[in-house]
Image 1: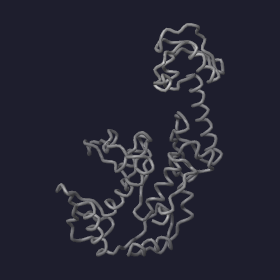
Image 2 (image 1 turned 45 degrees about the vertical axis):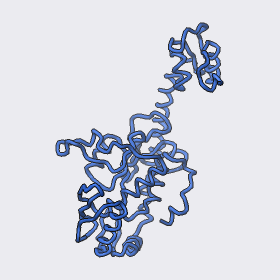
Image 3 (image 1 turned 120 degrees about the vertical axis):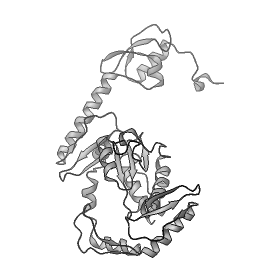
Image 4 (image 1 turned 90 degrees about the vertical axis):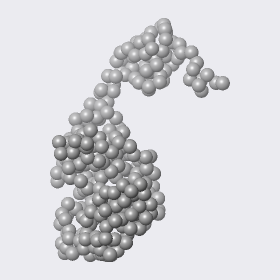
Length: 317
């Protein structure tokens, strides 16, 4: 039917000149041989280069010199904005508006975000922004809702550990319900705390050990991330997580290599290796609203539009 829709119509020098004109430039050749023969082009800034029409038309390619200039300007802008906030942009490479850059605030906190989030949404250190909102009363309220207690009496900051006490009986019952929901079993008889590794068995009779929070939150995290960004990668053991002590590689809970980030339920070694390899690691804490945290983190990273509204049912979950 329509050759334009099928994109199979015959290309010619007129099409090349039309494409260049739309991009504010010129095609300097007068003769067209085929889509893979290099033509001479000139952009609006008078830069000249060679490229086949196929690359310009089908891959949205244009002036390579302008691309380099844009990247340099973008990185310079990021560093200037960081300095204006008494912080630093630690990245040395900027590709486009979707590039995750590494930032450090004056308190030494390090995080990743796209330049657009920092520049146009007046966003800065998420850790500093969250510190002032938390207090010991919130900790005690969270513990109470979970049927336990926060035994600490003083809250210092978001990184300081607090002392918690759970309701062991309720936790074992919850573990068994979760296992049944997933067509498996919780084989443990005793639960002594959040760091207790319970024994689990899936419907295929595979057995392993994991904390209740890990099993409970991982499934929900995957569902939320998949709804927002699509399914995560099947790759769970990337090469950069292979160490002498772990030759087969450590396993990430949820991994999106195309976006350069992963979601993990707390693991210091993986955190260090991900940071070293410039992979943003989103750590999920068991007491947080998973829907709200993942949604907000994706917005801060620029992976979903800042005007996207959080579904009302997620706020109250």
